[in-house]
Amino acid sequence: MRQIAIYGKGGIGKSMVSSHITYALATKGLRVLHVGCDPKHDSTRLLLNGKMAQTVLGTLRKKDFDVKNLLMDEVVFESPLNDTCAGRIFCAESGGPDPGLGCGGKGVVEAIEALQYLNVMEVLKLDVVLYDVLGDVVCGGFSMPIREGYAREVYIVSSGELEVLFAASNICKAVSRFNARSGVQLGGIIGNGRELKDEQTILDEFSRKLGSHLTGFIPYSEKIKECSGKGQTLFQHAPETPECEAFRQLAEAIWDNKEFSVPASFTFEELHGWWAQAAGRKR
Image (cartoon, rainbow, N blue to C red):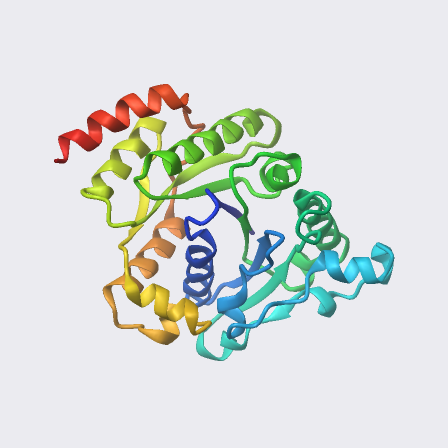
């Protein structure tokens, strides 16, 4: 069973990317569990026809955090899209505290431990678990999938913007730090276009600078915004578009990937110096 973590700066579109990867893997006949690791609990929305799933943390809260009273079908949901693909998609959301209260990472810790207690991976006979994880790995909860070895391979969603690349570099620092402990490695960078000039080239150079590669690139698209607003993936909304084909190719590249590394990372000053030169060359 493959366990894959998708990280990236908040707002970069990693949940959208993750949802499309999950669906594309399921079309290959694979059984995939998509775990949203974000208090907003919106990672699985496109896989559930726009609906927000009941969260693991919210359900546990109602049961006074007694995991022994937790049932799998209370926190793991089959996707209604299963009728359209050869495999199966299962969805779970970690959840978190109300805004301004508590630690968001707690939901990730509680969710993963609950899923382990329920023996979900074995019961559902999964081929893949995909963790869609919030942000820059700034606390222990959000780093848990890679710190504890649940996910041995990490992909980072990034645009070519300087601040987003710096967030990716920080995530690489965490991957390098936890490699000796859990064996986690970087599988590659996933480009999510923001209409920056020569963005794919910048991301390709950045990936190689890390000691990795650009696994795939999703071009900027109004179609993606449209489908998100409708609570659909591109596979339902616009399956014949180049953007949808880019997601198919991305999923194939991840599934076939054999290039893993312990990545380099950079200070902001180092990255800014390189980025200014790289971006300047493209103009």
